[in-house]
Image (cartoon, rainbow, N blue to C red; front, side, top):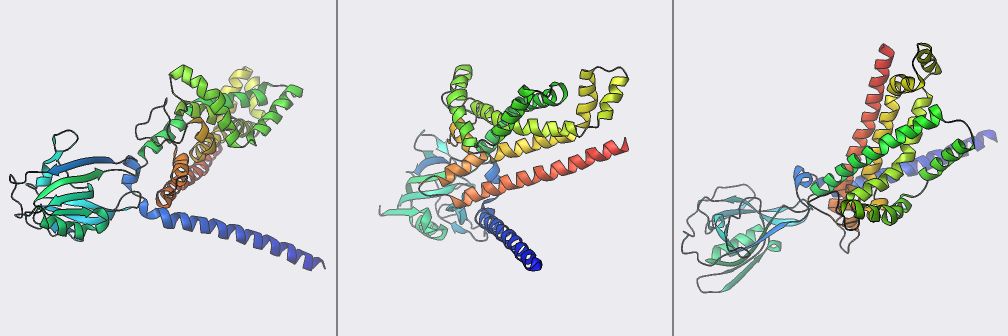
Amino acid sequence: MRRIKDFILNGITYVSSGIGIFILIAILVFIFRNGFGSLSMSLLTSDYYQTTYNTNIIDSTFYKLGDFEDPKIENSFFSETWGISLKNGNNVAGEKIVEINYVAVSSPFKSMNDVATGEKREIGKGYALSKIIMTNENDDFIMALAKDGAEEVVKKLEQATIITDMIASTGGGGIRGSLLTTLYLIILTLTLALPTGICAAIYLHEFSLNNRLTRFIRIMIDMTSGIPSIIFGLAGAVIFIPFMNGVINSNGGSIASGALTLTLILLPIIIKTTEEALKVIPVNYRSASLALGASKTQTIFKVVLPNAVSGILTATLLSIGRIIGESAALIYAVGTAIKDNVAINEKSTSLAVHIWSLMSGENPNFALASAIAIIIMIIVFILSISVKLISQRLNKIKVGN
């Protein structure tokens, strides 16, 4: 009977573990299948919003149309009339585009008329063509769209002698602004949270008495660590946004108010982790330091803290991971406006909130959201490995000493 009971319990354990592993693998497969194709260096360095130009060539008599040599670029379609080569591609968001990948030296595309400014503008390699409206020698109307594909666009260009309207764009779909926002949040939050949390842990473990007040403080720290982050977001909206509006002249949510909100979230983590690191330092270290004539303060800052560095480093890296992955609190405290030009007194989005913004509209962008999720997972994975390697290194140094 006992064996049957153990067999059932073991079976439940294995089945539960298997279900959990299956779900985790399914999520990872979904994310990598949708987002891996969008990963590129341009995704990290490009702006989210495209720069669009409206151009034309009303008078083409200045140019020699139809006198260009085909460069024979693979998987491309060349227009001998206009001296450009087009190819089908995808932008960083995974959307299909028609892209220019070659422009002849004397091509009319080297000097087109910018409708907005009236100046000459070069539409060159890397630009995506959205729409071209043209006419031929008989003044027949011709229109080519990106959805037609590169081959069809080139065929229509070959028939035209004048481009009356062309929309070309460059960039777009990148996460450079969100990366900068996340970096600003990490720097500002750690600048505020680390000194405060470490000092609080030192007081609780090294100076405070074991009385009702200390026990109450510990209970409140434990309770705070269990509060949902969206509650902190509401606190940030009610307290920190008006405060920072008066201090840095911001208008609504800002990176600064988000950093203050994240500081509240991280303080319990930093305090608890640092205090645990202080607890494992042998009492003999303190006794030996005091016996040699050092004061208690000198003992803490010159003996105890240096030996607790690995634990404090763990708290720091855990905090960075929490900042990168936080979204609910930042939606209220910072905002959901995706920005390319980032400032600490303005709204913006971190990587996690960027995912939320992409998925909250009528047409969710699964490809770009999955790509950002992969980037977040890679960063968190690197941080986790770094914690272990640095901790092992520090422990070896201690043993060697």
